[in-house]
Image (cartoon, rainbow, N blue to C red; front, side, top):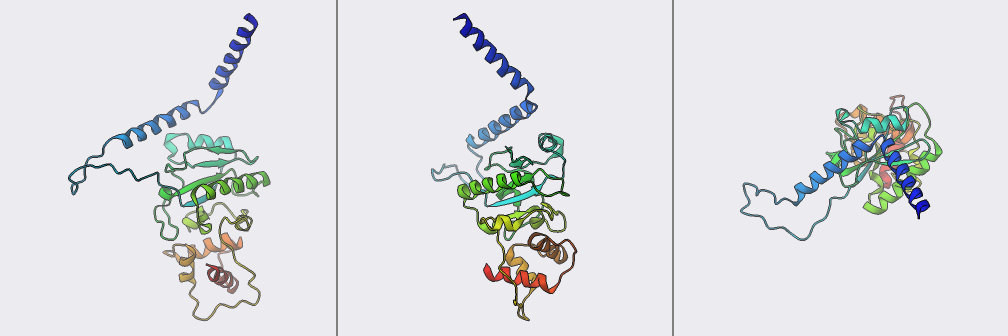
Length: 266
């Protein structure tokens, strides 16, 4: 009995030591506190709007589901650095998931809650990207290839998200796509075709011998894909980065062929 009690106390001691060594113990506590505050607000009967005469709670509702996934690279040098950035109030940035170079996935925010990762931007008819998206940050400084273990973990996570929320293939995009001209992540090293081959994103078929008709309108086609064309040059650059890994800033007949081929499949 004494030996059993000794090992029990020893186990409790190691558990306490592990908890004390957790560098995110305080932020995890803050997260739980904020979630409780939000839950309390939801439980309270809201004050009627000026045009409402009373409150009758419906029984038919659920949480709003995300409808778009935005992929980023962290532009930092390690997962630890990124986690620290996302757990400091002064930075005012966050994401739902961070995937480290070794493939470890850190879940930072409930999928139904709004992270601060996309900033201003749009995709198709979605004009408040943060309110309807899941943000995924890949541990990468933007000047290096993405590790195979990291890409495998990303594909596995995307499979889960697609299954859980029925996200359309065209709504797996990059930060550069929703914020053309302002952002370039997840960088030229990212393989969008690898994702599209698994059904995460759209892609085009062979363009050999393809010729867009004379009436083909580039900007209209870019809008059909999902890009904002408020800045037409930025929209073209974002498209070229995503679909051709091209950072030259040029717009050629080959770019138009790829765009035409893509629109034909939508």
